[in-house]
Image (cartoon, rainbow, N blue to C red):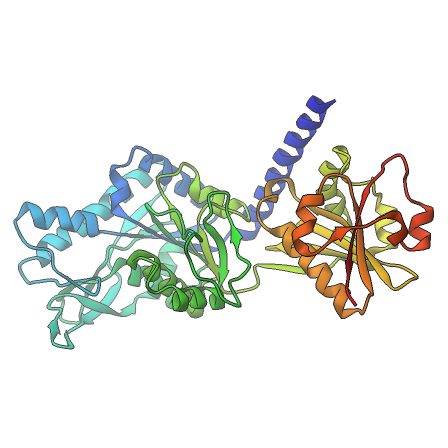
Length: 450
């Protein structure tokens, strides 16, 4: 019996993942993704796999622009010529002597990316469509041939994208007189969001998101979605700003730089900004084709919400509940039984896909039952169930119920931290008490609200 249940669970997880992939493929087809890829990944054994995955995205109808990170290549080139690498506030100070070597290293990184795209059957095209000007002297520091972006030639990029090329833009800009400047690849990737409509911006490096451990949280960040490895899964702009404000002395330079640029990119028009590790096989595909990747995402528009269920949600509610019913955690529901009490149900939606549900059923004595809590098989450790229960408790308070109650066979310890305590059959309203299933012997928990 247990083996059959395990097989059913595995089948549900696989089917859920396939449905999700189909949904996201349709959603992102025709959208533009900008990928900043750190050159430190190029020596990793899985770099060809990463580039093949990017090629698969392009073949699935997603437009792509790639910006190579070049710090590792530049450092190696300057070291080979015995030229010191100097930085101020994380920005490289580019001397006249260093500039030709920096150009050579940047173009070399772009060429390696183009070679991998060609091997995967895609047409990469390398060029510089960035106008730049000198950073000049700031607070007494001369940045020499380090520049900042003045303008990006959008018309050329849009033409190349329409012809199914993958533009690769090394971080070298040029002024109107033809003088070159070394520019930040992170700034370039972020700045692109101001010129072209970007669905997703990826920062792909060696860091797998931002871990929640040791971070100070506030009003907006008290409840964060975490991955199994403790990485913050998703933040809206306000949450990202709060984390920066409260943890300026905890976050490292790279994390601060990512959050700042993610906020700027979202404010410039990008929908999602992702920080992921390119050393993990399939990290890009997982981030694109599921609602929960392994990295940290900052988002601008509505990403997840708990909302009242509607008629179109009923098949998804049944789907999410199926595994719980098969294991005996929930009593069976039908389309008709859910439809009859549809106004009591809420659903947890991520990118318009349903991944959780719950209900609050009112009774004659002024109490209400928390019922039907279920979360999709691939999202059980995401905090979705917690969010639904907290929502239903708030809803119960808002509607003025005297108390909440629930019946459970397996989840006692999960419900206790919300404030539920052990109750008895006498705590149930009469109509519920009369239909109590003596064979199932569910435990009863209650929460007084008044």
